[in-house]
Length: 445
Image: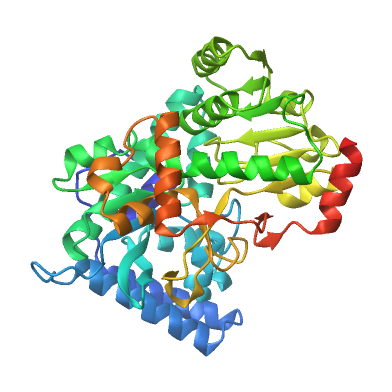
């Protein structure tokens, strides 16, 4: 708890990824008792308090209890996540998991939640048997945003974010390996970028193998964009595709599209060298490239955009978006909120897969009220699940900047495992309906 409070007050000194954090179970339970009384006063039901307390006790027992040597409690793999929603007082998906925290003051809630050890949210089931785990890494986008506001350039701010986050990610990896017996790990959210595509994890934790999810994500971005363009009346042969975020995923997606029918691109990234590198690759393929001076500038040049950024707050607002614009958004927090895009006459879609019938998250867990529809899966989730299912982790994991040929391979393997592109184009837990697509088509006709 003191570590979290010191960070929030600006006194934080970073640990290294492999250094252990000492969690005091009795102290955490003492803090919970105060919050429990507060939650009940503020209207929490006995059930909400009971389920929250049960899950806190389970988290502490599994993390701090004695491990069973040689026994795997977690299945074949673990998918590491952090709470998804930006500026959500109930932490989005984790607010559902620990519902009594919805009734507690935000600052107290932050301190308590960020002081918890990593914990399993739900298991995956394959044909009804335990297959893997969704593990929560107690990080909050809102707290990471406090680092970004402390000044310095983008690189130095991201380094500070990583310095705070890495020790906590390290604890999640140790929990998966030593407590659950899992050595195959997939990274969600910003964790790939903060860990050198997982190489820092593999270097520190013997026997652990990481896949970033970037190949599966890129494949779904490409497939989703093709479908969205068709529904929205956009001819990709004559319309530029905007790329906001020219990192590993944005670059691979652009190159894949350039190898297809897309002839021109508009690029933006805060890192000029990333833009320059991708510009050179695309021009080498004979494509036309423009560079925008901002994310909003991309919207001024095209109506179909891929966003794959690691900003810790939305980078587009309503006034940036023209009617008829389609944004395929893989950024979490989102590049733009759905209501902002729709108020401007645009639409946001997320690149998602449909899970095989044989594989399910227990309890129909869908990453919170603003998460995915039942049966949908993120690209990073699809990648680790596919490689674990086909036993191809060692030979086909992606722990580096993803290459276009790896995107094609992971796409083929995912189909072999039973995944398909989710035809229910959606974002924020809702399908984009036929009326919305009709409006988009009219604007683009």
